[in-house]
Image (cartoon, rainbow, N blue to C red; front, side, top):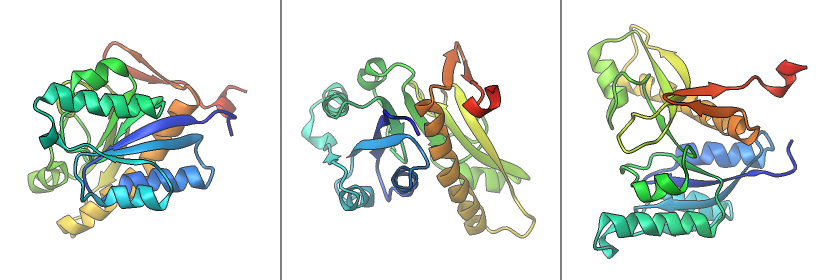
Length: 211
């Protein structure tokens, strides 16, 4: 494991199951990552309870307390800077992140989506893929930009939809892959293996593969 850990700030809106997978992997020493802060736009988000239990600073930023979207995003940016974050990780954060944060962390804001982008973007990616009748869907980790589910793709993992799968079965499959893939991608960043060339995200070989 590396001596210096990658400090991540995790943005959430809800239950924080992806956050928990990152916390668990970091605690187990499986990834060279430290969750420096958890920021939520909802005071009742269970993810804040998960952060408290793991002794991680949790911050609720109330959108209604800010007169403008600019002011709200500046508050997010300031909280990330205060905790000396290296990488911003969106984990079920159900808002478009403003340019105030994106410009502060260029190519250092990532998101996870429960479908194989560019197919089925938006908040209902699992249901949309299921209703469309595709045989293969999956999970995408991508860079965030000014549009929803539009940034360069970092990693994807497929999920096969069985003929007898109900939507609940597919949701369980997707979430299991999310909880595996997101920590793996964070370790790629911790190892300095992720770069970006225009629209294309490049992943350098694992150190063990270059020997």
